[in-house]
Image 1 (cartoon, rainbow, N blue to C red):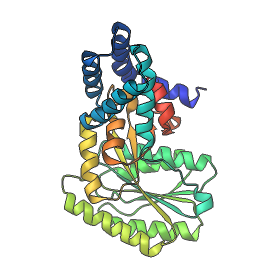
Image 2: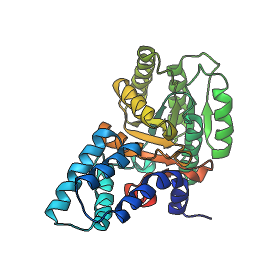
Image 3: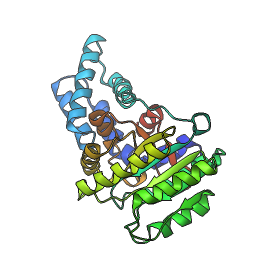
Image 4: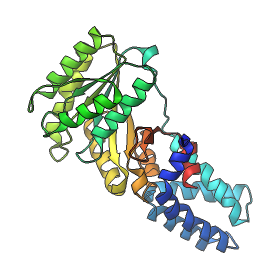
Length: 304
């Protein structure tokens, strides 16, 4: 059985080849730290989807540190770069809640269709049930055909419970039923699937607003979190989606899926830096174990 760090390293193989492979060539072929060296490094970061604004911030910090520490060997810049990139990921914070200690934990899962929301919900439920927590899932994406059928498969795999209504039902009504069931049965975690129709922001905002109002009214003592699921393979488009969702929802964490299928893992840095929202979990494969809690140090180690 592979360890978490081994799975992470394996899953981030494409990003590592694209990112550090090229950076290593730069460091090994450079004899001096000059403007050309910095420009090449900056280009590599931008091409790796780290994002322009984030790259500029990292480069400014790097140049200042190199100057202050009087570093002249390009090879030593790599460790400094790793440290700065790790600090960038820690900047948004990443505290984890223990539902058993804090009471009912309600997690709203948002994101456009196709990013892997249903699979992510199933994997999250599995993580919680494996820790001995009682999980209930609310199928509140009532407008997408087969959404409930997909969730049922994951409910069985994760040994959790499902609350659903007929297709087209009011999503807030599904969440209401799920809250009543969760309270009556003293569940630890309630995970709510939601619709992903971002092209109509006003309707989606109203829908999420109704769901949040129900939660605050019916379970005021609960801990409410909103996780945005993003597909890493879409690169900068994932950042654009995050910015759009951030306008209509109070996002408390990001879940990045499909990191194993992309060389664009650098987008994680842009998301954390530009939005100030922590990444909570990353998906680096198809298996349940491949959805992992995000640890900035391990992530940077894996891509370097």
